[in-house]
Length: 182
Image 1 (cartoon, rainbow, N blue to C red):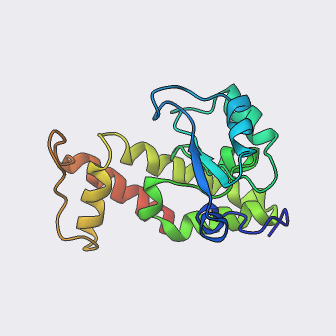
Image 2: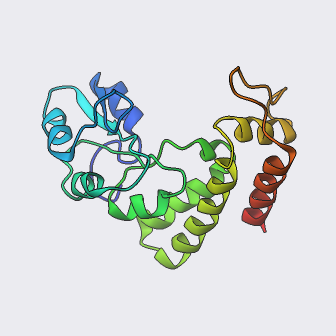
């Protein structure tokens, strides 16, 4: 554990051990929460982490990750930016593409933890390319299509109003996955 915190890279583990709650950042709550507010929430007993849902890496994200309170985790939240967010101090990630390339994300986390930037950086770029392919259509359509194509789920069906992923988007995501293995 690089920084010595119990449960580092495993915010869910903190919640189990401490009975904690996670705060929500970004706009999923209807109101954006800035770095200052999230740090104040982090000081509340039982709050152990926050997943931002900003859709970007903005100034509040940089400020929050730069000055995290002790025993407070913020996982990477944008599939296209796991490597930069890890570099800024994110703890692991909550990423849809993690379902498709789990070993690669584990490798990315391990490389960042060990300081192997020369390996983590190109892997992060390849994972970002996968994320662009996966999010070329509304989530989770492409994720489900890829999982179904791999035989990992029985059907690529999504609930209305979503439509199934196109063959082109599915093929592009599968090509990106193949490039990760190659």
